[in-house]
Length: 135
Image (cartoon, rainbow, N blue to C red; front, side, top):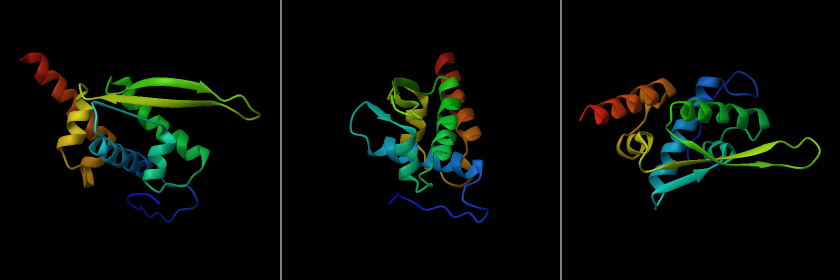
């Protein structure tokens, strides 16, 4: 059972915006509950926390959101494990450290409503990086 429930009416798969918001929200909960200076997670862990359907395509959508954050330098890939079986693939594990502006944003702000979008998070984190560089 996840930490929060989202509802959608259009078929078995949730819309991408819903996956995006639930991934950001689950990442926020994951970082707030962490006790150290880093947190490692997989896309499937985030999907399970947010009560999204346990389908491989949904895990891929969550991974797409995480890859977008990684492209902006807000988190990193920690390991990639190749699954050796029929229909196998790769299992990605991501890491976020307390030095990341995303960590500071997720720890300090309450991301709800419009703030829980990927665009808002990226804009805020890039703004945090730019103000840190100008100081």
